[in-house]
Length: 120
Image 1 (tube, rainbow, N blue to C red):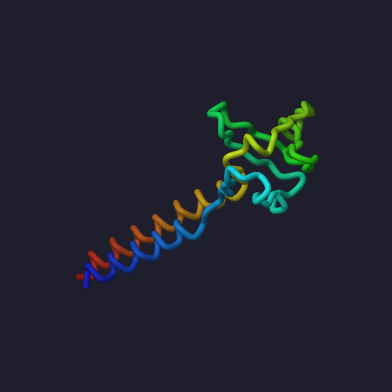
Image 2: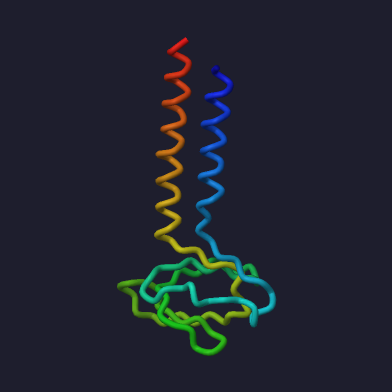
Protein backbone atom coordinates (compact mmCIF):
# COMPACT_ATOMS: atom_id res chain seq x y z
CA UNK A 1 0.00 0.00 0.00
CA UNK A 2 2.80 2.44 0.88
CA UNK A 3 4.62 1.93 -2.41
CA UNK A 4 1.52 2.34 -4.54
CA UNK A 5 0.54 5.69 -2.95
CA UNK A 6 4.10 6.96 -3.20
CA UNK A 7 4.39 5.77 -6.79
CA UNK A 8 1.09 7.35 -7.82
CA UNK A 9 1.84 10.66 -6.13
CA UNK A 10 5.35 10.90 -7.59
CA UNK A 11 4.02 10.00 -11.05
CA UNK A 12 1.37 12.71 -10.84
CA UNK A 13 3.89 15.27 -9.62
CA UNK A 14 6.39 14.48 -12.36
CA UNK A 15 3.63 14.59 -15.00
CA UNK A 16 2.55 18.02 -13.72
CA UNK A 17 6.11 19.40 -13.75
CA UNK A 18 6.82 18.10 -17.25
CA UNK A 19 3.58 19.43 -18.71
CA UNK A 20 4.06 22.97 -17.38
CA UNK A 21 6.94 24.22 -19.49
CA UNK A 22 7.25 28.01 -19.71
CA UNK A 23 10.08 28.34 -22.22
CA UNK A 24 9.84 28.67 -25.98
CA UNK A 25 13.01 27.53 -27.75
CA UNK A 26 13.95 28.76 -31.20
CA UNK A 27 15.90 26.95 -33.93
CA UNK A 28 18.89 28.03 -35.98
CA UNK A 29 16.67 28.62 -39.04
CA UNK A 30 15.10 32.02 -38.29
CA UNK A 31 12.47 31.67 -41.03
CA UNK A 32 10.91 28.67 -39.23
CA UNK A 33 10.60 30.45 -35.88
CA UNK A 34 7.14 31.67 -34.89
CA UNK A 35 7.30 34.79 -32.73
CA UNK A 36 3.53 35.32 -32.87
CA UNK A 37 3.10 33.80 -29.39
CA UNK A 38 4.91 36.78 -27.82
CA UNK A 39 2.39 39.22 -26.33
CA UNK A 40 2.95 42.97 -26.25
CA UNK A 41 3.21 44.40 -22.74
CA UNK A 42 4.56 41.21 -21.12
CA UNK A 43 7.97 40.73 -19.53
CA UNK A 44 10.21 38.12 -21.14
CA UNK A 45 13.72 36.84 -20.46
CA UNK A 46 15.60 36.32 -23.73
CA UNK A 47 18.51 33.85 -23.83
CA UNK A 48 21.09 34.61 -26.50
CA UNK A 49 22.84 32.09 -28.78
CA UNK A 50 26.20 33.83 -28.51
CA UNK A 51 26.45 33.27 -24.75
CA UNK A 52 25.95 36.90 -23.76
CA UNK A 53 23.95 37.56 -20.57
CA UNK A 54 20.20 37.00 -20.57
CA UNK A 55 18.22 40.10 -21.45
CA UNK A 56 15.02 41.04 -19.61
CA UNK A 57 12.62 43.02 -21.72
CA UNK A 58 9.06 44.28 -21.86
CA UNK A 59 8.05 43.11 -25.35
CA UNK A 60 6.55 45.70 -27.71
CA UNK A 61 6.64 44.34 -31.27
CA UNK A 62 8.50 42.58 -34.06
CA UNK A 63 10.19 44.86 -36.58
CA UNK A 64 11.39 42.80 -39.54
CA UNK A 65 14.23 40.64 -38.23
CA UNK A 66 14.39 42.32 -34.80
CA UNK A 67 12.53 41.96 -31.51
CA UNK A 68 11.80 45.38 -30.02
CA UNK A 69 10.98 46.16 -26.40
CA UNK A 70 11.99 48.20 -23.39
CA UNK A 71 14.27 47.33 -20.51
CA UNK A 72 11.37 47.31 -18.03
CA UNK A 73 7.99 48.74 -17.15
CA UNK A 74 9.52 51.83 -15.56
CA UNK A 75 12.71 51.93 -17.66
CA UNK A 76 12.03 53.32 -21.14
CA UNK A 77 15.42 52.35 -22.63
CA UNK A 78 14.73 50.64 -25.97
CA UNK A 79 16.03 47.08 -26.34
CA UNK A 80 16.50 45.69 -29.86
CA UNK A 81 17.50 42.04 -30.25
CA UNK A 82 18.12 40.40 -33.65
CA UNK A 83 16.01 37.26 -34.15
CA UNK A 84 19.09 35.40 -35.36
CA UNK A 85 20.67 35.76 -31.90
CA UNK A 86 17.67 34.41 -29.91
CA UNK A 87 17.99 30.90 -28.45
CA UNK A 88 15.01 30.90 -26.08
CA UNK A 89 12.34 33.25 -24.73
CA UNK A 90 10.94 32.67 -21.26
CA UNK A 91 7.75 34.27 -19.95
CA UNK A 92 8.55 35.44 -16.42
CA UNK A 93 4.95 35.40 -15.16
CA UNK A 94 4.38 31.80 -16.29
CA UNK A 95 7.66 30.77 -14.69
CA UNK A 96 6.51 32.17 -11.34
CA UNK A 97 3.19 30.35 -11.61
CA UNK A 98 4.95 27.08 -12.45
CA UNK A 99 7.35 27.50 -9.53
CA UNK A 100 4.50 28.20 -7.12
CA UNK A 101 2.46 25.29 -8.44
CA UNK A 102 5.44 22.97 -8.10
CA UNK A 103 5.91 23.97 -4.46
CA UNK A 104 2.21 23.47 -3.75
CA UNK A 105 2.25 20.12 -5.57
CA UNK A 106 5.29 18.95 -3.62
CA UNK A 107 3.59 19.93 -0.36
CA UNK A 108 0.50 17.98 -1.40
CA UNK A 109 2.57 14.90 -2.24
CA UNK A 110 4.38 15.16 1.09
CA UNK A 111 1.03 15.39 2.89
CA UNK A 112 -0.22 12.28 1.05
CA UNK A 113 2.90 10.31 1.87
CA UNK A 114 2.88 11.34 5.54
CA UNK A 115 -0.81 10.54 5.94
CA UNK A 116 -0.36 7.13 4.28
CA UNK A 117 2.56 6.34 6.57
CA UNK A 118 0.54 7.26 9.66
CA UNK A 119 -2.47 5.23 8.53
CA UNK A 120 -0.63 1.91 8.87
